[in-house]
Image 1 (cartoon, rainbow, N blue to C red):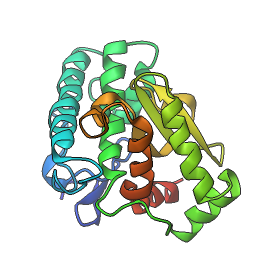
Image 2: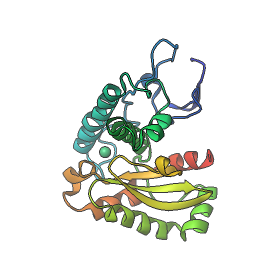
Image 3: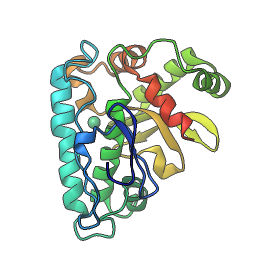
Amino acid sequence: MAAGFEVVQGDILIFSPAGTFYKGVPLNHVFPQCGHHPMTFTLPNLPYAHDALAPHMSKETLEYHHDKHHQAYVTNGNNAMKGTEFEGKSLEEIVKGSFGKNAAVFNNAGQHYNHLHFWNWMKPNGGGNKLPGRLEKKINDDLGGLDKFKTDFAAAGVGQFGSGWAWLTMNNGKLEITKTPNGENPLVHGGTPILGVDVWEHSYYIDYRNRRPDYLKAFVDHLVNWEYVDQLFSKL
Ligand code: MN3
């Protein structure tokens, strides 16, 4: 195990040498940083089989979304960063530093960050109504309870015009529901996302066609990995 890598549970790990952390990146997709190779983006394996989220998200959707779309963000991000000030920086530094300055780097780095988490924000038999206690209390206090959260979070996703994301974000000590266009995320607005849902058409069109509200309802009811949300919440 290289310095700076810490196994937390199973194949979930924290990578912290640059003051940042990635969770949920399978070990076989992380390589030691020896100082000779600048950090590059790599596509992690899904943390479950491609067919594990069916019928709420199909094998075909994940084959396109993970294997092709996320791979394209990785490849294009690595190409866009070549020879720029962003080479070798942490993913969060790249996302924040390139926002409004270098669209090619930002769009791909932002989407790499978003999708790294998105795969972990879902799990087979997710959703439900049982949340870790401290997180449940925070959602009750700041957002009026889990049922209201589900309604409002889905409405944010429905209300995002065109491509983008809906988020559960910690901002100045309070949880809030936000939405962003394209590859943008709460990091560039001073917050930290602890849950997000991709509302680009590539995330739902194979399974739901134009029914984005049905996709969002399935996401909150059957897919959300609340343990992973709680891990991110607990870091704040
Ligand atoms: Mn996507």
